[in-house]
Length: 457
Image (cartoon, rainbow, N blue to C red; front, side, top):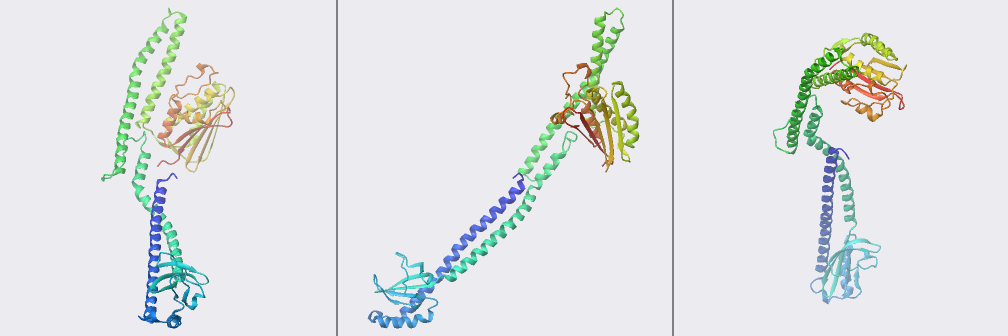
């Protein structure tokens, strides 16, 4: 069972019900003991009545006279007492009529005991001595058994009720006990790389839960320090690298302008310029990502008509696709306006388009499907390239992650590995989501989906 609250409720219900059951068992034993003790007192009182009826000179009385006196005494109480008088190790000299000719069984070493008499039932018997006679008095146990059976039924019903009630109480207690833990969980879920400055509220009391909250806050302090240092290093390093790269580029351009430079050297310098250009793009992309992660990149969110925005973007997209021997197709459904920064959303679509162009076979279509429905603007860009596996789709938006077909010419894929990471950051700043999915069976293309809210919170 995953839920701690459910386990606490079950533990509480089990402990409470088990405690009540133990109390009921102890109560059963005490109640039975007291009821039997009451019957023992009744048996003794009956014996005392028999002894007083016989008188102090009972030893001189004949057996017929003894039977007559006792029968006069016992017949009126025949529904309550069973009486047997015998001499030691001899047959009975008197049996009450209700015994139906049976003896009361004797239990060796016991003066008060419970036995069963044939045709009579369970009785509580007691053995008394009036030398030379042994007097045995018994009382029916039927009413005691009924009381104990009723006690068991009532206790069973109370145990079931206790289980149900304790489950409800346990559920309430678990919610009350785990309320601080849920607050810590909710606060921890809110804290991410975008808002590392938020902390978990800690109560003034000193207990295990507050200690855990303090430890988590200390961990978040260390994480925030580390993230700030990494972002600062990325931004500063990227900024400081731009100047020397610019100088290297100027020197390389001067060398190419020198007509005395041999052709093979000129080709090497040209390759250097291309690599410098690529390195410059990487630095600019890293600076953009650093600004996006630090939330210092300002967005100019204005309501736009998606149809008009896509109509303008489609003109450039068709030109890029036709230049590579491909076709660009687009469609839009729905009416309304969506708040977004036109410049940055154009950057997102261009990055996705460039990636699609790189992997699409000649003459293949690239489709952009737009739909505005139920407060969500959904953009889907589909290509017919080799596609990605579901595992690769989960990692494709990470920085410097590139899935390049080794069979292709390496120069045909000179991306920085940061384009999709930039798309994710920009879409995230718009409170949107971006995801990649296989467009169909393996090898039939990739579908990248962007969703933006039509109304910002």
